[in-house]
Image (tube, rainbow, N blue to C red; front, side, top):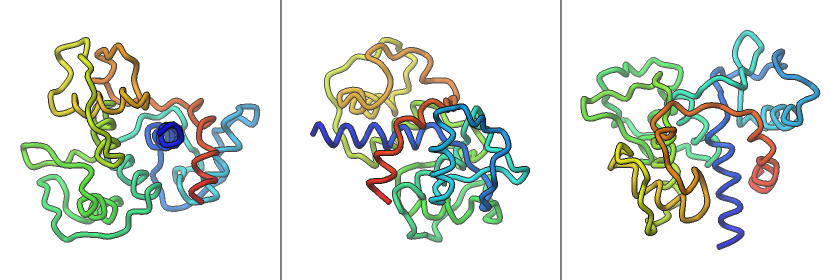
Length: 199
């Protein structure tokens, strides 16, 4: 279990903290050569797991949307099977992420909202990330009491499970999990082991 936890933490570092958009790789003009994370960003770009923007930037501090997140999940875990059963009121099937959404629905790790929308451009929150990751990793809840009663009921079991395996968050879960997920470039320092092992 120790090695599994280590691998899972590194997978999650990749999944939580990398922005992506276009389908074309560029030489990123906004990365600082002196930053320890820069070589890793370039390596992951070469491997096709992450992409920059059409203006040649990477925007390492930009928060991640739901559409960007599901695209990264699919690439990282190698999901490719698509389904035609995608019906959301705010999706017309012509979006840049449409194929990735069909893959996501086939994989079954993320859902839409009760009003029938998917909200692809909405920034993804930490508790949404926790739910997705735990559905993929398949952990089970352990005894843990969230410290804030506004933690969404639908996310509690998943957050408890990831906490039990020391995957994400701290033992004190605060309103931070309610806010859009920030992108922290430092997290690239945790990625090489997973990337090299998987690829």
